[in-house]
Image 1 (tube, rainbow, N blue to C red):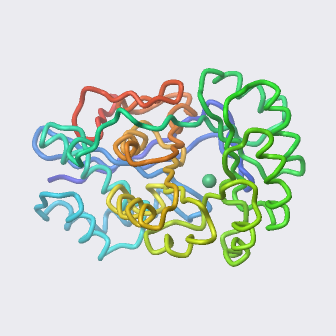
Image 2 (cartoon, rainbow, N blue to C red; image 1 turned 180 degrees about the vertical axis):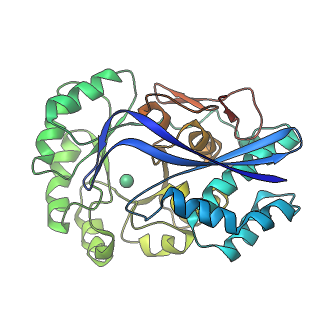
Length: 337
Ligand code: MG
């Protein structure tokens, strides 16, 4: 087995702004696990909030090189366990675990979801995400993707309700909002009723992650369900969300890949929490891994590759919110030459 580390700069279709930053290019690291004629691909995009840089990712992956190239595994979870004992960098673990799953399915000639015993006929549709901007720009971003079935609106400005009111004038599709930690508990409670009246189905991560205790009041008084994102990174975080959130948004780079993501889904189901998987502006490499989890989810945000001006791979393609699977086993990824 050979570990090959690639990195790319993914150009975005539009500058993407959330409550804490704006980006125009998304750096990403691609892991290739090559075994004879077969290659499995995994991805982790970099992220300033989580301190994940290309350099850090490469260093973590290099420290795993000997293990990865020598260890003979049958199930990707075996590789994940041994790698997790050696490094804590969930972004690196994610890229490695996604590649291991892609290779696993390619070895067995089947899509990963099928190897997990899942079928794709009841998949949820994905939202299209609209980053923060001038309101008329946000409206035109939505209109550019007017055939998507649901929109996720990034909030955290001084005029959040007005943004949703204006967008509502141009579509009847359901909305979700994501404040990325920008609101207070009182603001969240106050906004929840008017947002519900505007056809918003849930609020994602309203409060800063260190204000988890205040989420109990929000949980009780909000007119809308609240979904944890920055408060729910790894399997160990799920229990603390019970009674504070109605659901969790899992990100593969934050938890460390498909192996821990499946653990979190199981935990959430036991606690009767709703389950969403989100993306971090990944290329089709990362998005295709999310496609494998799709049959297990209530909600999904897998528009990452749709936000890019150009892609580096083919695989699961999300068209008008619907995930279309390629005729390639594993996660279905082929790196474009
Ligand atoms: Mg979020």
